[in-house]
Figure 1: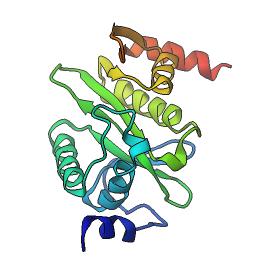
Figure 2 (figure 1 turned 180 degrees about the vertical axis):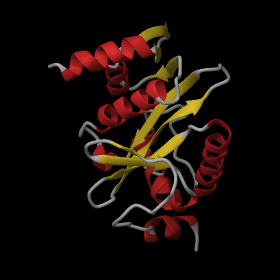
Figure 3 (figure 1 turned 60 degrees about the vertical axis):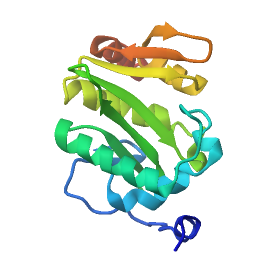
Figure 4 (figure 1 turned 135 degrees about the vertical axis):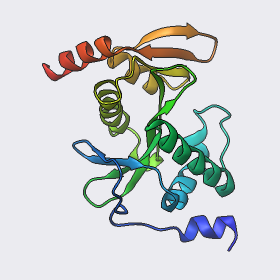
Length: 194
């Protein structure tokens, strides 16, 4: 089976695969560490030019690249205890996207990122999942800072600003952001009280 046939035949799972690993839940979503079984869902998402247009490089990825990416993320999980999650709908198990806190070279610092399947755009996924990831990162992992470098998507910039983020660098096309625990907790508490 070639790559296009593998993607189109895909696995439309009605329930997320069972795993004894970490699960984060939000009101609408379940996040669990990415697994090899997610290849086709993640591959379909990264094969959509509209989805990848706002990300560095802006090009679609092959299944081979996705397979290597999943292996890399799994290695990060085993070595650092955090990396990329798969996001699935709590009811029905539909694939929503990927998001995570990836390790950086700096101790106590992780990079926040998310890629949302086009079918879930403009439905508040990044806001809901981002808040859960930041809460987990600061309260459980005890991170000192979360960064989002090279943000070119205005919705992503708005999300990190609402979470208490501040701009650390700006160039003609992108802005880099960081969030510290105190600023996030203040912003989160202010948003809850509204």
